[in-house]
Each structure stands twice: as C-alpha cells, then as structure tokens.
Length: 366
Image 1 (tube, helix red, strand yellow):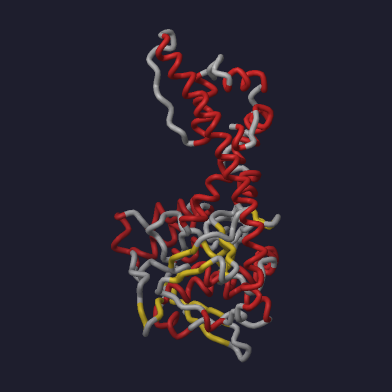
Image 2 (cartoon, one colour):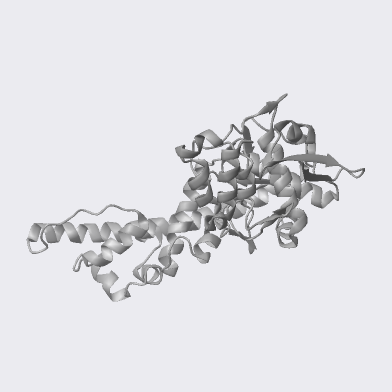
C-alpha cells in the first residue's frame, strides 16, 4: 500500500468505511464483516469465497485475508482511475492537433453496409449508449429508443423514432394492416425496445413482416428510411438540433453497440469499454449509487479518447450527417428513388416521397 501512496485515510474517504476499522483491517487484527465484503465485492465485481462457518480459526484467517485483498483491490481500482484520467488529459492535448489537421468531414465521406475503424488518436469521436449518457454537461439523448424527442410522420405522432422505423417492416396485406394498426395503438408504442420485442422479433408475426434488406443498386432502403425519420426528428425538435450542434462539426458520432457482435448500427471499442468500467465502478463506490445514476454516467464519459471503434456505425453516420447539414445549413441527402422502390406500407397506403426545388424531401400516402 505504501508504494502506491494510498493510506487508510484515503481508503476511508473512498469507501465510506471508518478509518479506525480500516487501520485494524490493514494491520491484520480485524476482518471486515461478510455483509460489508459482499457489498464491496459486488460493486467491484470481485468474487468472494463462500464460508460455511466463521467460527473456525482457519476460516477466520481466510476471511481476514479476503478482507485485506478487497481493500487492496479498492485501492488498485482508484489508482487505475487516477492514471486513466491523467492519461486522458495528456492524450486529448496531444490529439487536438491531429483532429484539427483532419480534413473537414463532408457528406460524401459516409458509406453504409461496410465496416469502419475510427481511431480516437486520428479523429474526434463522440459516442453514446443511452439517453442518460452525459459528456461535458451535454445529455447525449441521440438514440431511437428513448422518448426524449418524438416525431410525426404524416398524421401519426410517435414518442420516439424507433417505432415509425419498425412500422415500415409490415407487408401490404390485409393481415399486415391489422397488425400494424394494433401495434400503433398499443401502449407499448412508448417503449421503442418493448415495441421491437413484441411486434418485430416474435415468430407469430413472421408472415406479415418483410425483409428490411431490400436492395436497389448497392443501397439498402432501411438506411434511407432511417435517414428520413431522423432528419424529420431534427426539423421537428429544437432540443434535438441543439444536442447535435453542441458536438464539434468535425467529430464522428458513434452509437455504442449493446453487444460486441451486433455492429450494423453501432461500433465497439474494447479498450474504451474497459476504461469506462473502471470509472463506472469507482463512481458507484464513491457516491453509493447504482450504475444507471447521473453521477456514474458523468464519470464514465470523462474518458473518451482511447482505443479504436470498429463497426458499421450506420446510426452514428446518419446522426453525423444530420449534424453536418445543420452546421452547414443544407438539407440531408435522401435517396427518394430507393424509398419509392421499397413501396413502404403505411396503414394500408403506400408512402410516396418527392423533393422540392430546395431538395427538401416530403412524403404523401397514396
């Protein structure tokens, strides 16, 4: 402990355990109680040995040793955090020059249906995972699932952008129309993920669904449909526009994938994931809060510029394109030929897309 320059006073502040108790633990004269050990171990994801009895001398020694190891693990964890934060500051300062020398992003830089690598040392990356994420005091409410910003398509209003995207998957049949109408009136429409689980992933609706991977040339229509929905959300919500405009113009927005093997819409960064786990766990201990609390989210996003993001990042690319359009005062390019060829069924009618003289895309149902 001495070589790490961490003493019982530091540990007491970090763990909310009395300093006198920690002194006795560190001196080997008192073990921590199993209850306290289990709480700390759970927060740190450190497995503890299950003891059948605490009365036997041998097991007392074992528990005492385990107590010391847990305290040491806490110290190591906070030391890792301090090193990570120090390195982050150094990296950010060193990378800024590279970021600024990077050619300005243009709308021609984005490609779908292929894997990308975003090296944080070469280009500034802004990632998000949920609507609770906070970076530099900015709530990154950018995802489709959350209800922070709704969207209206023709006469139908939705609390999030995931539901209208998924409604396009239904076929142009009587049976499909019945399911579509039922789904749109379901209370679960306010929960993008719940809606997806109930109506999109269930086998009972297989016959009324169609493949989103409809191709025309090299482009999948689902990307153009998503672009249309997200751009509508931009136009209809000042708060959403403000979030995008609070992110540097030349930064890439990245949706952090939920799983390492699901990288169509997002990306994965192993090195950053491990670093943020350290920050998350220390914040939970320091503030005695759950991992979903605002303080934990803010702590996680104090480290951003480490590792390489890998994945297709379709959602992140669409959001970045919208951001560039807002900065530059131009319209988002949407391929209406692809969308019209897709013949999207919208409550018994087919959506038809057209552009005006200013390249603004509008839609009608025919």
